[in-house]
Length: 257
Image (cartoon, rainbow, N blue to C red; front, side, top):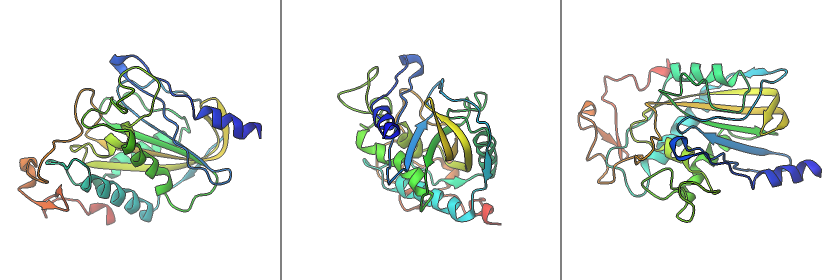
């Protein structure tokens, strides 16, 4: 009972840094029995909280999980509101997946490594207990849409902009950042993982890296307008399901090979 009360109290805590490197630590809970899911998204210079575990076990991401994550991102991107004029179709990137795997293997609950975060966006999620689908770790990122006020990701709540305690929405905005057209993710099962000061046993840790990096302070995630009316020239006017779609000679299916 003390443990349950601890996590209940934890969900009430959000940490905001100064405006030059704005980060609010978010706790998104999906609870079924003892199951808990937390997520965090990188924006600016994140000074996360965490430590190295005593032990860890690798859990390779399956092709079905890859497809599920990618399809879910593109479904979200295709249906943004207000509609996007320049939303790009998102592709899976093996290089990003490898970098996500390397970081997930550390079992550290914070964004990293710092040198990569200058170029990549990153969403994190962690869960204890069993789960039926990888999307149970991804969906909380999208659920932040209810707290998001277009166009700026730092204004997650009209009653709580800039510096204050309140909800987070930068997982969602990274998912729908129009120019972030590549994603690669990795899953790690950590025997002992420190999550905000508490040791979690058998934690499932999901790391997704995005390129090009999104969540730039002061910028909107996409341009509002008729879908595909402002696609980059490299797409040659190709459009599918409200998104700028890669030309046929691209490598958008290469990761199935």
